[in-house]
Amino acid sequence: MHKTEFMTHLQPDKSLGIFPDSWSEKRAGRIPGNVPIWVGILSELTEFGIFFVAYFVAKINYPETFAEGPKQLNTFIGISNTLVLLTSSYFMAKAMNFIRRDELKKCEAFLWLAFFSGCLYLCLKTWEFSWNDAQNIHTNTSQFFTVYYYMTFNHFLHVGWASCAILWVIFRLRKGAYSAKEHSGLEALAVYWHMIDLMWILIFPLLYVLR
Amino acid sequence: MNKFGKLEVLWLMLITISLFNTTLGENFNSTLIVSAIIALTTMFKGMMIIDHFMELKEGNKILRIMMRAYFFVFPMLIIITLFL
Image (cartoon, rainbow over all chains, first blue to last red; front, side, top):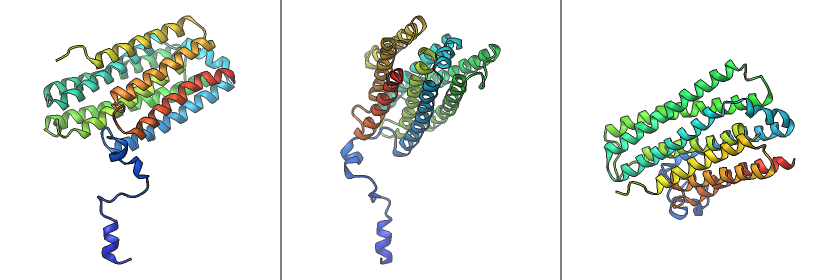
């Protein structure tokens, strides 16, 4: 291949041709946020998907342990965390609404509310882990608790770093990086935050509600 | 500005379903009916967040199909495992 012809193939605006044309944004519809965050989200969903499969395999093999396990957990903290995360998702959606109207102050206020919700979740989860410890519940107490700690601690980490990402987005918002016209970075954070909420929506009934 | 819009209704609905599911789980054993209600309402909550909070209802079809498939498969496993 001639050098100039080769360079033409490397043009950044050219499609890689890996995916069918019907998958393109033009044909399949707008991608909220940006493509890289969706690569991250789908990777995270795969990771949690493996945890869920492990949960179901373990539950089939140890039905009594999985029927007794949830009864030993603190359901009050579990449902509180559910309400806090659902509310944080609402705050994030409101922040998106306000950035689209160029109401930066209101957008920032809702981002702070989402951040504090994330912090509250982390505090409640820490309280739950120490409450478990006081009840003599540990990672090796039973197969149920091994799965429980694997899932919930992993989710805890996700809420932790996504809360830090909210602080970064607030910093960028204050620097004038986002407006009604350009806010893909903020939207990328919003969809990532909703993904974390989605994972908790699945984790909560599996670990706390089903007996 | 409408103070009580679509997002507020959605948030209240999600909160109500979560509280209902928890009450159900606290008071009843996970029979087929109870598990099916919990699985279907979990599926519904997931679909609502995907469509309205993540805004995939009018967004990318491929991403919406993948996300909805995820929230169909895992809640369905709750019901399927009862038969295994």
